[in-house]
Image (cartoon, rainbow, N blue to C red; front, side, top):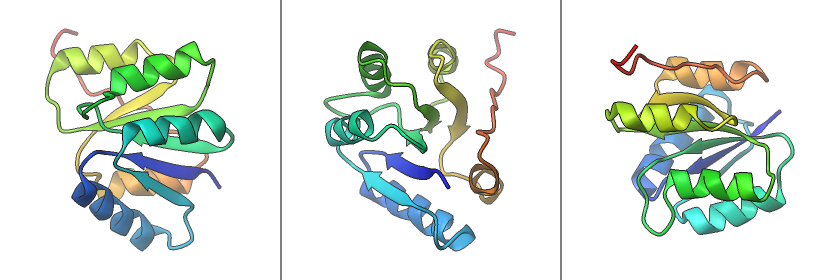
Length: 132
């Protein structure tokens, strides 16, 4: 079972997603961070069997800084961008990172949670950016 790591600077968002994930799978390994720097250090040191749900806009370290740091440290871990952004450039930027497997809208839906925990494979979903 993959550990799901929630990284969002909004404690309420992490709490909502934790409750939703736990309601779908009570024994799911789950770690939540509101500080992206602490999350980065954790992910960098614990790379095996993890799935990261990463918010884009956070203070101190945004998603792009986080992803660039992983690349610089040669850390390969599955990432799903989880954001309220509707900016097509954010989706295009996310697609440029090899380890980003999907771009999902906040909050997570029950269907997306089922997909995340039902299989070891990460669901790759790239909604249309309007430029295709």
